[in-house]
Image 1 (cartoon, rainbow, N blue to C red):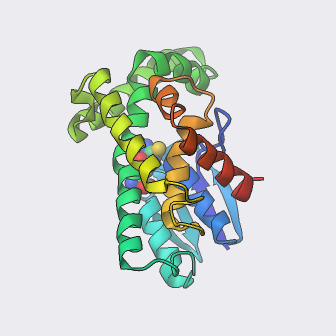
Image 2: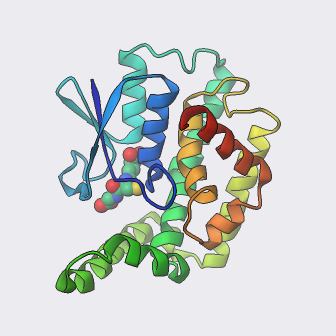
Image 3: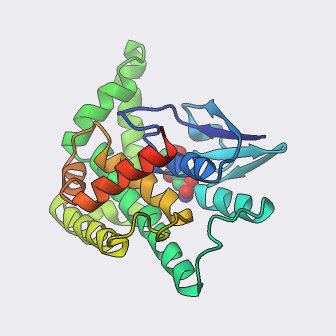
Length: 232
Ligand SMILES: N[C@@H](CCC(=O)N[C@@H](CS)C(=O)NCC(=O)O)C(=O)O
C-alpha cells in the first residue's frame, strides 16, 4: 500500500501544493491504490518538504523521485508510448512546470500583496492569537529568503508575469490540439502540468498569475479534461 503524505485540500483544488497534486494525480493516472495522510507541517518530512510517500515501510520524498521510483519499481506503463523525442519533451515540460512555473505561483501567493491578502487569513486565520500574529510573517520571511536565493524574488512582478506568459504560451503551443501533453494518451508530464495548471486556472485564489493563466483557453480546457478524467 502507498501512503501519500501531503497538505489538505484548499482553494477549490484537491491540493494547493502543485507537487502534492502532481503525485496524487499520477497515482490516479496509473490506477494505483493509495491512502492519504494529511500533514500541515512539512518540517518533519524526510526532506523538509511535502509531498512524500510511504511505500512498504520506506519513505520516499520529492515528487520527481516519487514518480521515478514508482515507475521503475512497479514497471508502470504510463510513458511506454513515448519515443526518445517524446521522453525529452516530457522532461522539458516537467522541469518547466516544477522548477519555474510553480515557484512563480509561490511568489504570487506568498509575496505579492494581492495573493498574500487572501492566503494569510485562509492558512493562518484559525491560529490562536499570539501565533496568528507571529507565524505568518515567519513563514513568509522563509519563503522570501528561498525565492531570493533561487532568484525569482529579485525581479519585479511585471518581469515575473512576462516570464510566466512565456511559460504558459510554451505549454499551450506544446499541447497544441492534443488532449494531453503525452499526446492522445497522457504521460508523466501531465501529472506535473495538471499539478500547477489546476492551481492556476481552477484555484479560487484570485492572483495576477491565475488571471494570466486563464487567458489561455486551451490550458483551461486541458485542466477541465484532466479533472473530468482523473478527479471525478
Ligand atoms: N522538489 C519538491 C518540492 C516540494 C515543495 O516545494 N513543497 C512545498 C509545498 S508546495 C513545501 O513543502 N514547502 C515547505 C518548505 O519549504 O518549508 C518536490 O517536487 O516534491
